[in-house]
Length: 154
Figure 1: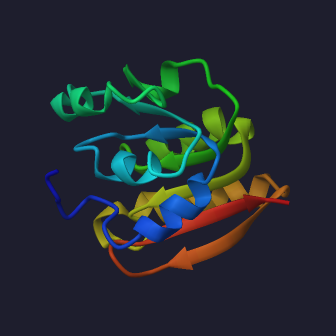
Figure 2 (figure 1 turned 90 degrees about the vertical axis):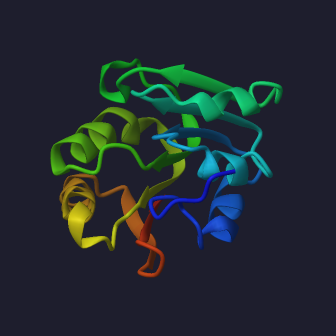
């Protein structure tokens, strides 16, 4: 597996805990590092990415894995226990993903790159979305390894 700076390296334990026996939707597959961690403990994983992600083929043998190519903001959202957002890090894209998929998340939402200065839109969108969605709270805010902001439904 290719490890890159944008992978959720350093947050493996958190991803596994949040994914435990959960139906998970991951927005932003990229190289599959996060998916490889989530698949260790999840019940089912739907990974969505707008780009061609050749690495997804390595996961297709798993009956728990489903890859969908396309724009997450144009897809019909599905209920999940845990929503992991690590796609387009612009304010607009994160806000659209939260607005579209957030209401379908039953337990947790995690946003990667929340402490990355080049991805300031992640944090701004998350806190603005939280200000309008009072049934969600910040559960954890990890600042290391590009950051991981975890929200929990009340």
